[in-house]
Length: 440
Image (cartoon, rainbow, N blue to C red):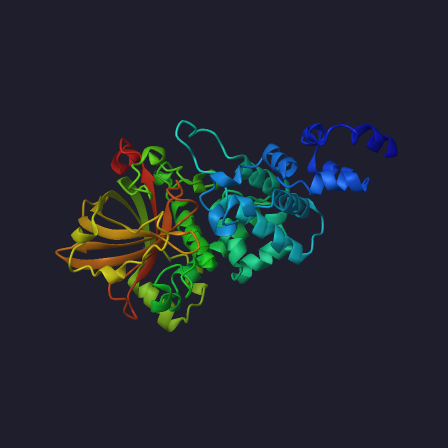
């Protein structure tokens, strides 16, 4: 190693740095331990050129392209390239290790969530180019047993781990596969039952969480969000005729601007509202909902009854932006949450929706950016100047993501015994086949 030092360090540091960018970060760390001069070269560079190059060549998306990096790092100058790359490599090692500690698994889960959150958006002309950061997350999770580890399974069944539920919401069951088919079927059944219990428990809907998948502080309740996704995908799995009419799932669908037409949307429509949408709405028979909440005390046995059924409806919508002055007078403006980020002002929209049986309604609502960087949707179905249903939702992933919005609908007055149910709203191309054509 002394010979290596004598042979390398006399070379100008710029050339040495260039050579080190071709090495694995672990090898660079090893080189830094050979002597004081090597450590200074690796870790004390004021511009972090070496670690920035190692980060981008790993490869990962450039952090400045992320629409969320400002919420975590505030400015590129605050981004520690070495620390972030080391954190990601450590998460990979934890995921691939044989017997990781539970606290280490939590660190890895938090890292994967951060990587997904900070993936680069889709850009015009590059719609087919995939995100290296998201490819890395999928590769690591597929190569490891992290999502099937006893710790993760227990956390999943306990249903109170926000970080795990957030990652699973991004994945939307795309990596839920098991070598043992019977084991996979049993776990899927338990997961679906737990999710139904959460989604249809009326105690999870109150004024303090806006009767939606949110916490009392206004952040997304990711356990609730994941439960919504699980319920809807479970129902769609039983509807073979709608196999080609499903919301996009997987990490690529969470990227900002991945929705149809999002890369060419006008500047004023930062959320990509204008255009055609599809929406799945699920609900229980009201008698079953009432029994579950007020007679059975939310006992899961109801969902094990072979006679139990959930209804699933497919709805299409056409939405367009409106000025705040054009919001109908009967729909009070204080119903809408406000964006505090000037880059993402609150947008208002109206439109029409119609179901498979032709029943048409007017839709009015708003889109805003929360303080934690989550896009929130609030809208109502209206007929004859009366609000029939109120909906609260959160965008899965970045702004204008293909994954769309998941949320819950409730009665307009939020009374104690009002029905509730989950929905999934996602954008489709304006020239897409109608849902009637899709079912043929």
